[in-house]
Length: 432
Image (cartoon, rainbow, N blue to C red; front, side, top):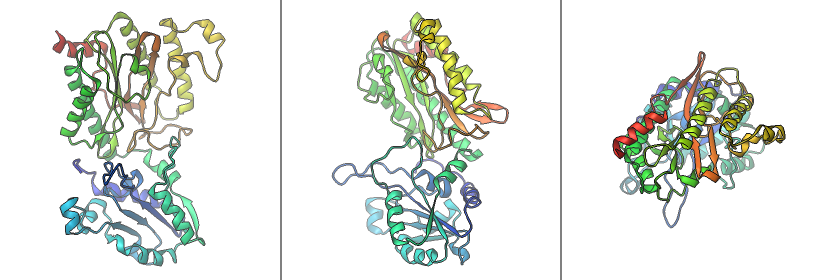
């Protein structure tokens, strides 16, 4: 890893919080993610399972965490199983965690090699009443690949059919959604790195640059600031491509007079930043572009004020829709007649603003959390309204990340340029 890990006390506290929610006599099992194959003998870059990382701080493949508060022997109440390294692995793949390094990072004292897993677990399964299995229960997820935790769950139930099984997913969603000070610090770092990359882009963009060149500038700034890389595939969408919500080809030339929609965020310590801006290729918005930009910015300002304890995403999105409706009327994109005749299930404003305004943010860019429960202090949400006008080859979205507090909210990206004048001023330092 190139990032500075969170302190080990954070993971000790996280496990205490999880243990407090477990049923008596229960054992919990968390597996690391797979190393995903690409082609030939290659694999994609490893990304740790977010739940295992949150509980242990271990960012290494082929790792397993066991939590068994009622284990008959104290040394088995927390166990970390790791891949045992050797000279060949060290030569070809590099350093792997030693037992002492794993203890220091996680705070777990019993660290064993994977070769001991079966014998230890046979013992522990005879003394536990039920088992918490960890599956991907993000309600935005739709996977067809039988990932490691899913394969393990099927095998474990077959091997131990007499036990009852519980879901760790609801517990993890309840715990992870409230961010600790250490997590907020990591997310602030991710936001700060994102700011540096955006300011670099503002000084780089000019008519004729390619979208992938902009992506390269962002990646350069991320890596040089110790980020893992991108928290998600970056969107560098100029002109008409800005109206494609998940555009990621990033292969077009940026033309004079167009606007570029930039949606990217750094991944630092596996925590995500998520930012969107729209900038003029030539450094100056046209009158119409500025009108649309200011409308989106106004919705963003008003919407973010509603990210407060007690509100719900359902109520919030209804109110944001009303704000957007007013702006689209001012822009003459919809009429009062359109609103009068609209389908309540798909309001008129959805023609130009068809996605949600906010989602949970944390270890994953679309983090886990109950979208139907009231907002609470410690949660982090994006706020990202947009207006997309294909007939004008114009798409504008503006997004910042917000920490909900007892007093309202804190903008984690408050120092990132967002005003149209500020963006133009920085860019025209290059274009003048």
